[in-house]
Image (cartoon, rainbow, N blue to C red; front, top):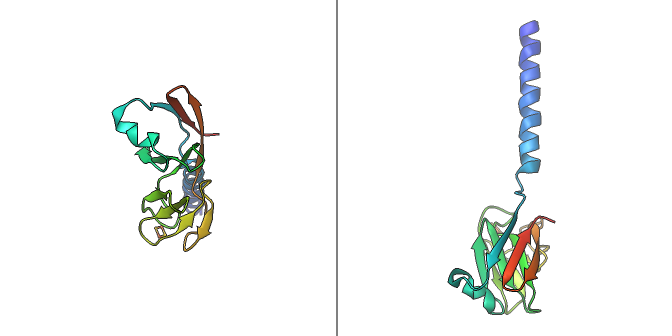
Length: 129
Ligand code: FES
């Protein structure tokens, strides 16, 4: 009987820990990228985008910088910013998201995680709000 109780407690602890990891799996970030660095030169162009730290950073039609999780919420395919439509599109099954990460066309139903951006001269800060 006590062995069964022990096993039940163990399963409960593992389950709680797993759920915590699910909640915490969204990374907290706070870093800068130097827009004068040649590796980020695409961000000078309207519609340009780069991937850094599992985040897609792009310069939208409104000239603002946006940062969204680079992985589609329908699976783990990478997303791209398509300036012609001012939308973010999944490269696998063509889910569409607006620039804030909200799904606008399926199959994805969950939003992309959005990070905050702030521009200080040529330094772009990307951080968890
Ligand atoms: S992985 Fe993005 S829509 Fe399927």
